Length: 174
Image (tube, rainbow, N blue to C red):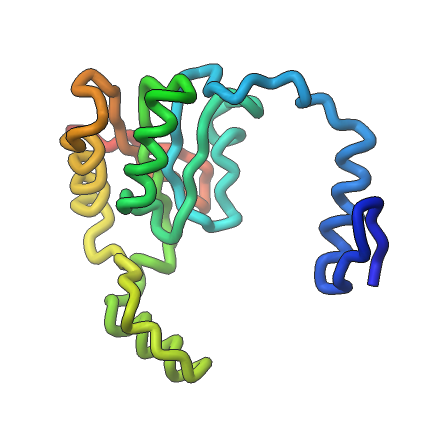
């Protein structure tokens, strides 16, 4: 086990806590406000190939970033957006799924079956919300934000697909 100033760190996490020690030595973001400086919320996928701040030319503190499998607009995302809009300065929302997304390669049933076959876990009690048609799904998710009764009618909402092979962001035309 590695040691950290606060506790003994499990070996499985030693690398990340060691990296954090390096990060702390040059940390300069302590003065940032909690509000989104650019008034932006980004909903994107948990895929580690996506660096949303860099993709959009932003800096830490500029935007609120919400991530989940498939960049889907779920009940929890909507809950978080309500908080971000009314308490954290968000005035616009970009829904940013990506190409080559694993969530667009299987059906709901196939995902459950795959996990059961590989790991013997029955996941049928949860919905994964896979993506059958990426463009139609993005439009549906944008509409879910735009029509949410607790979000302001003048909230700017847009969608764009991020290409993980080229870095290009393509705006979804209405």
